Amino acid sequence: MADETLDPPPDASPSTPPPPATPAALLRPRREAFEHGLLPIPKLIFPEGTLAQTLAQLKEKLAAAAGPGGRVGAAALAEALQIPQEQAALALGTLAAVLPAEDPALGDGAGDADIRDVLLFLYIQSYKRLVPRSAHKDSPAVADVWPSTSAFDGYLSALSPIQLVRSNSRRFMPSQADEEIHQLSYLQKHMANILTLLADSVEGEGDDSLVLTMESFEHLGFLVQFSEGTSLSQAATFFANSDPDMPAAPVAAAQVLDWMSHNIASSLEYSAERSAAKESNQQTVSDLDVTMAEANTSHSRNSTPSSNPAYYKNVTFVEGFSKTSVVKHASDVKGNSIKVLNCHDSVIYILAPVKYATVYGCSDATVVLGAVGKVVKVEHCERVHIIAAAKRICIANCRECIFYLGVNHQPLVLGDNHKLQVAPFNTCYPQLQDHLMQVGVDPSINKWDQPFVLGVIDPHDSLSHPAGVSDVKAESASCLDPDLFTNFLIPSWFGDERQEPTSCNPFPLPEIYGAFQSKKRSTLEDIQKTIRELQLDENRKREFATALHAQFKDWLYASGNIRQLYCLQGD
Image (cartoon, rainbow, N blue to C red; front, side, top):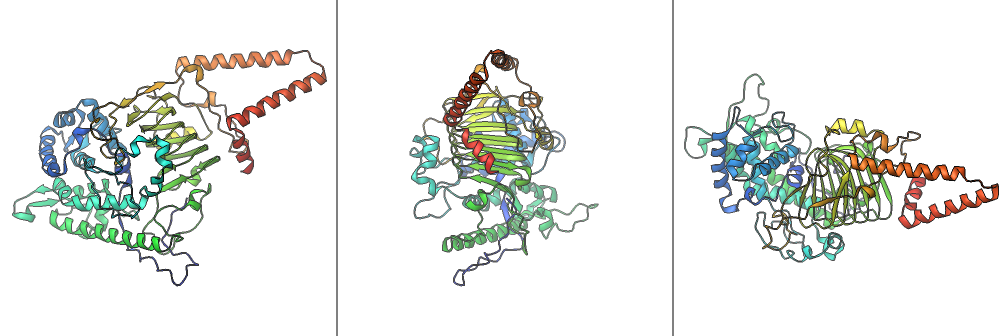
């Protein structure tokens, strides 16, 4: 999916209100922080009334325990928060996965993190995801902190993952644009406290006693970004055009707050006007969300951005497919994220390197994720096979799913799961090695069989289970029986290039699974040898071949794989 502009459709009728003019730059929330950076660990989540005060005290504790450069590791974080060190390590690993830029000192979470990043990460743990919209489209200004109650609590949670998606309430689920508005509203509400945490105290009274350096100001890039890629300090008039050889003078926190508030308010106003324009004309192609027409194309659109590049997309959607096969190559994926949403009875191939991947609301499907450099999140899926090579994976609220994994960190399992199974990574395609190198996944490390299990309740999720079972541990995943393990063969999408998955799978197969694979290959070779040695005349050979073909065809229909052959012919 190509980057999009906000130009109105050329055939828009004169009566259609024109979309609002795009500001020169729009401040947007960083989706990655909110979508992949929240952990359901109660001791990381502070009540709204004491949030600022608690984090201010925590800042002092961390500063006292910090090493050179104001950095803290898992041990210091565990001590300050009074949590097990493995949870502190998980928190730092999650922080590393959602930072806007690599932090060499932190690495994948094993090193030390900047205190300012830790404080911002802990602050947004109070964020509560947007609740489903009512039929009357209530204001998005809903409760944004935990705990809070929702009319949907206990109702949708009683449904299976796929019943939830297919229920009548699915049409009221928040859109991507709604979620961004909600995230911006949350930041607008809490920006004063956030800036106070980043600020340094100097001599002075009142608002003049708190100042922000340009370096501290840039850490806000963890939460917000300008839509055209301009850095915060370049956009801010008080830090713009600073001499790189001479650090910019600190700026009063009150001045920074005024600037941030103005930009957030402008973006919210623009988004609200666009939402109103969308309701008055559902056919506008300049929507904030991807249209179904765009989601259903497997090739990139070659449109060239026109006059104002202020609201580009960085997410590719694969949404709403049923009973089909879909392929996305690297050239089809725009941005650093991919989302596979509400696909059923289908096979989805994402043969591309990305940073983030989400699989949500799918059933009876197979999803192949070639190389994910940060995090995969699989949520509300049922009877789905996930084949993923990734740094990390988070599994939440899934049933009867099998995960064939090549992961460098322990799979995180949370929420209401049932009958999950994990197995080693089981496929290959010619570019996989290169894609793994591009995103930094190490195929020599695979922790597929070491799930890290947290609680059933996700306090950030409005669709979570009713209060009262927050201490119940989520159901873990069992290892797939080696006798049931098979390699998944990706069709030759690349002309005549062919590679056997058993020989090019970059993740070494555990010995017991390899032994069963060898046993199956040996059995197959014995059958082939027996067939070759059969003493049959030409008529019996033709009858035998016809019977084999008929049985194979019956299997194709019974398994649903015949559909993939038709899809291949269509390509």
